[in-house]
Each structure stands twice: as C-alpha cells, then as structure tokens.
Image (cartoon, rainbow, N blue to C red):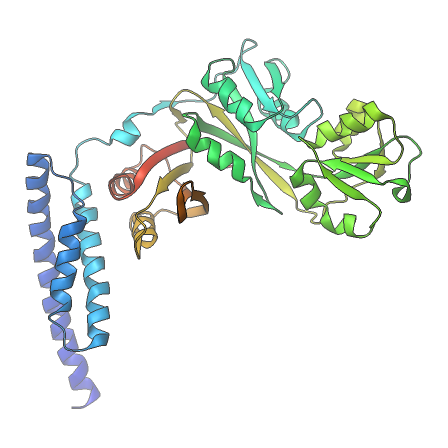
Length: 377
C-alpha cells in the first residue's frame, strides 16, 4: 500500500473518530444532567477505572494497551470538563466578594513581620503609607493569628525570594488559617553587612540575620571563613542585636534602612549573590474578598496518591486557556511522600474559564481551597 493510500484511509478513520467523539460528548451531557438531577458527583473514579480496564482488554498488544489507557483517560477528562460547565453555581467562588481595592484609612490596622527597619516594614509603608496603624510581630504565626482574630485588618508576610525560593513556613500557615491573600508587593533586596563604626570585614566573627538573608549572601560569607553566620528572627532583629551588644566583632546582614534605623555603619554594601535579588510579600486579610481587577489566583489542594493525579488537575488550567505561573509542594503530615500543592495562575474569579477550571479542580482534588485573587506586581 503506498503512502497516499495510507493517508487517505487515515483521513477517513479520523472523520469517523471525530463524528463518534461528538456523539460521545452529547451522551456525556445527558449523563451530567442525570447526575445533577439525582445529586450525584460528576467525578466517579470507580466507574472510570473500570471503564479503562475494560477497553484495555480489547487491545491486542502491550503497546496498544498503554496507548488506549492514555487515550481513554483523556477522553474521560474532556467529558468531565464538559459536564462541569453544566453545574449551577460555584461554591468555592461564591464564598468570595469582589471589591474595588484595599480599604485603607488612618484607622486601618496593619501587622508586619519582624521589627522596625525590616524589609517587611518597608513593604507595609510602600503599600499602605505611613498614616495607617502599623505594628509588628516577630513570628510568622503571630501575624496570621493577629489577622484571623481581628486584631489587624491586614498582615504582611514574605513568601518568596527570587534567589532562594519559597518560604515553606508561610505556605503551611496559609493552610492552617482561614486568611486569604488580597495583594502582593515585590521589593528589590540589597543586603549589606552592618556593624559598629570603624569595623572592617576582617574584624567580624559573628554575623546575625534571618536564614533567608544568610542564604542570599552565601558567596560573600564564603570569602570570609572567620565569619560565623547565626540565624536570627529577621534581618532587622539581627541589626538590633548588634546595636544592643556594642561588640565590634559582631555584624548583621540587612538593609541600609536598618543600618540608619539602628545607628550602624555599612561595612560592605550590596553583598547578595544576585543583583536581581527580590522578595515577594503577600498581603492577607480575614475577609473572603478579591480585587475586581485582580489577575493572579492562588490555590492549595491535596491529590489522591495515584498515577496522573497532578497531570489531571493541571489539565483544567491548560484546557481553559489559563497560564500557570507557579507551583510549590509541601509534604503532608502523617502521609510519607504525599504532598499538598500550591498553584498560582493568571485570571479573575469572575471569568468563565477560571470558574470552569475551579469547578473541575475542586471536584477532583482533596481539601481544595482558593487562597486569594489579587493583582500581579
């Protein structure tokens, strides 16, 4: 059989396959309407697994067996996506109220992580200005608790650095508390070595900073083996420690702003490993609201510990034409080698494509949560 004849036959088979596919989708719509009428969930894993086993048995080779499994997994995934569009309402989305912007007045209470002079305080001032009632807490958990308890209207926390990645503790706390993300702010980080007046790099024996600050300046510290890096609550808290002890062998890694606040000298300026070093801060609140012009959505979810579960979840983002910008994973307590995933993708909760994607992910995931919808910096 020559090539042209082969292609002609394939074209005819493809026409039949497309016709059968469209017929299958029409029946899938009928199935969805029945499920909805009796209150049955769209996703029926047992039925899908049984169906795949059945079609696998119809094949005549190991290769076709695997290929048919892949083909029918995709067919049933597309069928579910069609059926999700028929579900009236979206419980996960309906919990959120759209707002024009952050409510900022002189009475607004904002809690930030660290101490005065920290990068997080700087983020607070750049977002809210200096007229709000700002106060600090020195533990990530305390920020979450202050917001959830109503002691603060908003909280600001660092969540990710461009050089060292995500801050695991923050992701875990986003699950432990009901607060939602309503904004983000990015600051370019310029770490410096701060100490007492007259101190030189060779004089320094102990360097205090937050673990992220130490990681961001690892190459600088390698040049001075005599410097011992000691982890501290925050970069600014390290500067406060140097100021309090008045020991010329001590230094801190922090900002020039922290040096000015605590009356320290800048021994070495801009010592971070990367010139583009930046930190992303999130703004949280206890009210389930989202920005009307928000264009970034954050989710968290657990997945069944089965082959292809992450692929299937992410397919809802791709199928609806959305752009995923980030994915993080965190181990689940008491479930070795199982993970919770944190996903960011572009969109707004009022958009049909976003709602379709959320319907599907919420149906097929475990412990699904919308963490926020806010503006991408």
